[in-house]
Image 1 (spheres, rainbow, N blue to C red):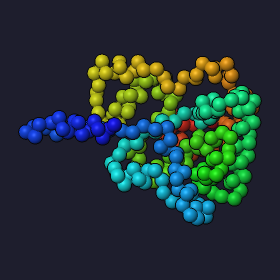
Image 2: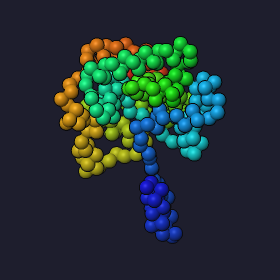
Image 3: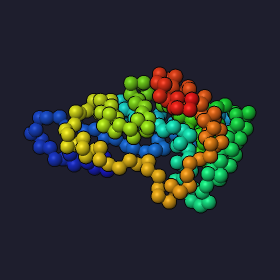
Image 4: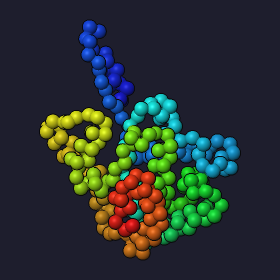
Length: 242
């Protein structure tokens, strides 16, 4: 769709016009940051310490000047939300707790034989775990993006900040993209949209996760949050439980 809009914009310009058409396009996906499972189909991948190539390598090859925006949520809350959204039947706080315990054990077993990065990107392990535990290990993914793109090309935001102050977050994004300021009318249109992370009505009755589950996940993710906070030089990425 972006390509069509660009072509229509160019075609609509008279050849006699001297101004330069400036178009900013983008792509948004919840999986672009972490989904690199295609590499596992290569022969001999089991001997690798991690993926030999990543999505960001292809993006950089096509558009080395691209600007990357990453929005992260407290990994503990993200995992429960993920469970509620994708689990089709028999959802409960007890079921979630059991799946978390099983997945943590599987990941820890992987670390006995392989490197951290290899376990995080391991497709077989990912498909075996009953909750998507590895997606909250943001440090590994962000660090890999920083090995391809310059630090000034990447903006990392928190979903909690976006929810608390949408206008401030939009301004930060527009400043990062070197666009704006926007009119009050445009700003109003952008900020009136409903929050995308609202829990579905049928899941609200399930209540919060068990405190034991929260404690287990908080302890599991703490080292990753600490490293993420360090490389980004922002204590906010420790989240409150760290």
